[in-house]
Amino acid sequence: MLDRRFVIDNAALVKENCARRGVVADVDRVVALDAQRKARQSELDALNRRANEVAREIGKTADPAEREARKEEGRRLREQAAAAEAELHRIESEMEQLLRAIPNLTHPAAPIGAEPVELRRGQTPIRQFDFPPRDHVQLAEKLDLVDFEAAARVAGHGFYFLKNEAVLLELALVRYAMDILVDEGFTLTSTPDLARNEILEGIGFLPRGPETQIYSVEGTDLSLVATAEITLGGMLAGQVVDADILPLKLGGVSHCFRTEAGAHGRATRGLFRVHQFTKVEMFAFTLPDQSDSMLDELCRIECRIFDGLGIPYRVIDTPSGDLGGPAYRKFDLEAWMPGRGEFGEITSTSNCTDYQARRLGIRYRVKGEKGTRFMHTLNGTAVAVARTLVAILENYQQADGSVVVPEVLRPWVGTDRIVPKQR
RNA sequence: GGAUGGGUGGCCGAGCGGUCUAAGGCGGCAGUCUUGAAAACUGCUGUGGGCCCCAAGCCCACCGGGGGUUCGAAUCCCUCCCCAUCCGCCA
Image (cartoon, rainbow, N blue to C red; front, side, top):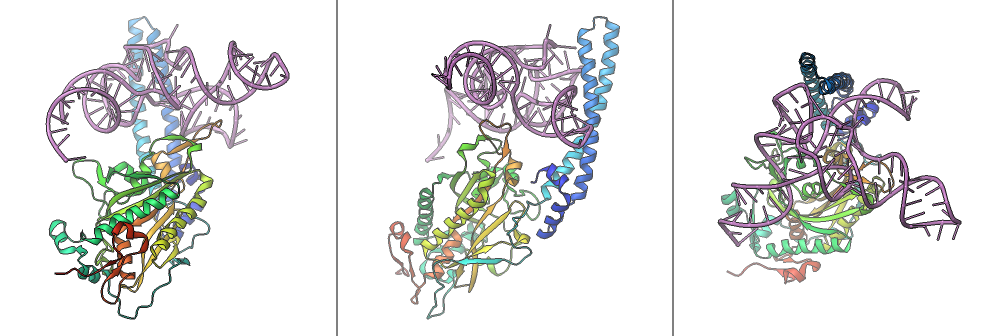
């Protein structure tokens, strides 16, 4: 969320930003509530001050009648203070809700509106097929790599068993990504797959509500994570760290769980949109003046990963209307998927500036300077396994229905080609 | 899951109903001394909010989170979270 004072002092700018993002937020109400808040705060302070004076006097008073009279006065003052405080809390909580609905500011260079802008293409050219390319569902069936039907019996639509080489491909992709992250100076982690709802909310997810993407665990305040961004960002929740440990780059592997509520239609086929997948995520904590260049770095690493895999892709500069609440700027990689005949999103990297850090209370301190400040947070996909499998199968397919294994994965898959199984 | 002991300022640590306006130490900053540094000595050193154009100043809140008792809570009670140790269970 944005800083309250910033919103009050820059109401016009914030309103304009909401409009550009297509978000409805009641900035005027926030301004009005802030005036009420100040008035109530002053009132409460005055009542508390007098009640404190009275309490101190009682401690010094010997005369019993005088003490009783003072107690009565103290009781009255505390009652008034309690009423003022309840009203103050009501105002603050309404303001908090409104503030949370206000999206982050937008990078001046981000495209405005709804149209994505293609920034560049990856190194691998889009392949011209001399046969009609199959989609990944057909390929997986022929090669016995995925069992959707059995998964539907076990967990319902949107789940899958990976089988045979697909399992090795999953492990290989995780390992391949991890090796690159080590080389890029990241600290590796494997993270919890569940997190407290307050952490989810701090990162910008809404665990409750009809349109939620989040699975909650009944009887607890935990939810299944939709991305390791949640757990990695949560690692420093409520912490104050020395500025000299920044930037801090973490890589994390986790399972990701998404209800995909409201997502229907053609992209729901196969592995493209599923309720659970494995993902290697990048996360960075930075000083404010480091986050712009860190976003470029995360995007560069994503390109390195997918250039290395030999998958054709384009880099998208996400427009203001599609940024979501926390992101200040966002780049997506979209892989060419021959079976669909179009590009499909495979990674996403965002600079969330101090939007998440403010909600989660993630601060830094500079030696010799007074006070603490909120740091910046960024996240980016290294490898989302399910969608990357789609891209590999469809781009590496051969006329005979076999699939060539990308060279960089062969050490872990143990073969250079996946062929139909002998019955 | 059960039992016990704990969570206090950047860190360590005292306090266990009213001189807490939180002792003391460490660290940090400034100064004195010094050619310079160290040592010693002196002072300052948390966050949020209100009054205010700003500053100074004054005031309010904050001792893991939330709630309660009381005229008054770091201190007593309830609850949740976390840490430690032991027991149980378990890959």
